[in-house]
Length: 95
Image (tube, rainbow, N blue to C red):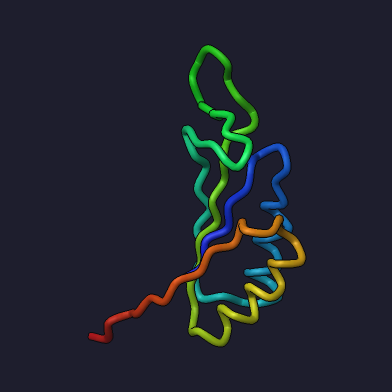
């Protein structure tokens, strides 16, 4: 399982989704737009009606077999800031 963290204003969302779907052909992918969050700067980003932020957090999460996930992560490290790609083992129970 792999998760990629980014901010909307610095987002490479389309490029990352293209790489994962069209080139790496990962098994599944979901992109989430956060309602609030903060990163290394410590500055809160929120989706309140008061500020209508256009710089909300994005998370892209995908999964595949371990070898394919590792290959995709290798591609992502060239596109993402250091420390913004997180991986952990996951399993898919069979029927």
